[in-house]
Amino acid sequence: MNTYIASVLDDLQDRYPHQPEFLQAAQEMLPSLEVVFERHPEYRDSALLERFVEPERAVLFRVPWVDDGGQVRVNRGYRVQFSSAIGPYKGGLRFHPSVTLGMLKFLALEQTLKNSLTGLPIGGAKGGADFNPRAKSDGEVMRFCQSFMTELVRHIGPRLDIPAGDIGVGAREIGFLFGQYKRLVARHEGAMTGKGMGYGGSQARTEATGYGLMYLVKTMLDNHSLSPEGMRAVISGSGNVAIYAAQKAAQMGVHVIAMSDSEGFILDGEGIDLSCIKNLKLTERARISEYPLRVGRGNFHPGANGIWQITCDLALPCATQNELDEAAATALIRNGVKAVAEGANMPATLAASRAFQDAGVLFMPGKAANAGGVAVSALEMAQNAGFTSWTFDKVDRELQAVMDRIYHRVAHTAARYGKAGDFILGANVAGFLQVADAMMAQGVV
Ligand code: NDP
Image (cartoon, rainbow, N blue to C red; front, side, top):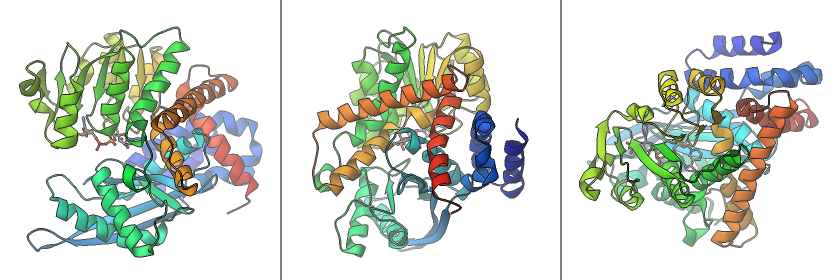
C-alpha cells in the first residue's frame, strides 16, 4: 500500500480504536484510492485524504422521553455531517440499540461516496439514536421522535441537511419526526425525505432501494451475458430493502427461495410468498418464523447466518453490516453463486468481499448497489423544491436511469484505472474523485 494512505490509516487506527466499523470502512475504501493518488499528487499536497476522513461536524445529544409507565428514559442521539463538498448533507437516521458514533461515522463515509456516485448534488451524513423502537407503543415512539427532533431541528433544513429513514426509522417514525420539525420551525418544507405521499413524499421512495438494487443487478448481469430470469436468489433481511428487492426480482423472473430476520431464515423452494412477508413484517411487525404456518409450506431455521449455506445463483444481503463473513462467502462460492450485490450497507466483511472477487463472482458493493433509495430521496427534494409531485412511472424511470448510470460509472472507472471488473475499486474511486475535485476547488475548508 502507498505510504501516504498507510499513514492516514495508521493515524485513524491510533485515534479511533473504539470505532471498529468506521475503521473497517476506511480499510475497505482507502487502499482502493492508491491509483488515484498516483495520478493526482496535488491531492496529497493539500492533505486531501486527512481532511476527507474527518467528518465536517458530528453532534451528540441527550434524548429524554417518558415511557407509558411514566418513567423518564434517556437515549443518545447523533448526527454526523460528513461532507457537504458536492451538496447539502443527506443520509438516513437509524434507531437501533447498537448505534454508536463510530457506526454512524462508517455509515456517513459510505453515504458520502454513495451520494456522489448517483451524480446528484447531495453531500453525505448519517444519524440516529441507540433507541429500540421494537416493542414500544406508538405513543412511546412518538414521544421519543419528538424529543429527538427538538434537538436535531437546529442542525437540519432543506438546504442544510435532509435526513431520511434507515433501520428502525420507517413511515411511522418519519411522520412523527417531520410533524415535530414542522411544529418547531412553523414551515412545511422539505427538510426530510421518505415522507408519506399525502404530505410531500415521493412516489416510489418506499420501493426505491430494493428496486434500484435489482435494476443495477440486471444491468450488471446483462453486461456479463447473464440474465436474472430463472435464477435462484437468497435475500437476507425482510425489511424495506429486502422486501422490495424480492418484489422486483420476482417481476424479473427470479425465484426468491429464502429470506430472513434477525432470528432466523425461511426456505421455500416454491418461491417466497411476498404478500405473507409484507403482512408479517410491515403490518403486524411479527417474526418471520411464522411464515410456514401462515402459507402452509417452507421451513424456518433459527440462526440468520445459515441462509448463506443455501445453493443459489444470486445472493443479496439486505439486512445489516457484517452479516456475511468469509465462511459464508466460501459456502456460497462452493455452491456456485454467480453474483452478489449488497442491498445493505457493508453486509459482507472485507474478507468475504475479497473471496468473491478472487473466485470471479460478480460483486457489487452497497455504496453503488443500494444507492436507489437516496437517489429517489434527492428526487423527493427536487419535487418539494418545485412544489410538484411526479407520477410513479416518472420516478421509476429516473431511478432506472440513475442505477444504469451508476453501474457504467463504476465499471468504466475500474477499467480506466486498470482493474476491470473490480467494482469495489470502481465505486470507491468514482465516488471519491467527484468529492475530491469539489474539495480542491473550494480551498482548505
Ligand atoms: P429495516 O429495519 O426495514 O429491516 C432490516 C431487516 O434486517 C429486518 O428484517 C431485520 O430483522 C433484519 N435483520 C437485522 N439484523 C439481521 C441479521 N443479523 N440477520 C438477518 N436479518 C437481520 O431496514 P432496511 O431494510 O431499511 O435497511 C436494511 C439495510 O439496508 C441497512 O444496512 C440499511 O442501512 C441499508 N439501506 C437502507 C436503505 C433504505 O432506503 N431503507 C437505503 C440504503 C441502504 P428484525 O425484524 O428481526 O429486526
